Length: 121
Image (cartoon, rainbow, N blue to C red; front, side):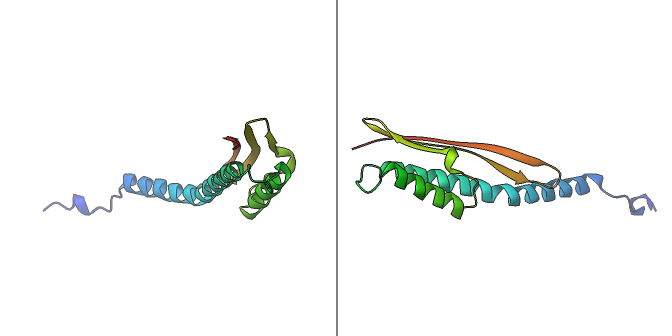
């Protein structure tokens, strides 16, 4: 009769694997909401650029709407980081800002840039 299999040996691989899964979940919980907010702001900027041909949508009105949306999404977009301008056939929306993501052992600075061009009708 062998008792060697009952010594209480632990599986280090299982513990390490569990730690990796927990770390991935923690990082995902911090990063996913920020990525969703950034994607939502980019989509909003695209919709604003597409509707720029309407008379009520001046460059200033578009800037104001984008800044309000960024504030609602808790994104650090400042007026000096947003540019909206038109040339004869195109509206341009450019936004540059930095999102700071605080992770347990690391702070990640994500430089975000939205550069959108839409044809005016």
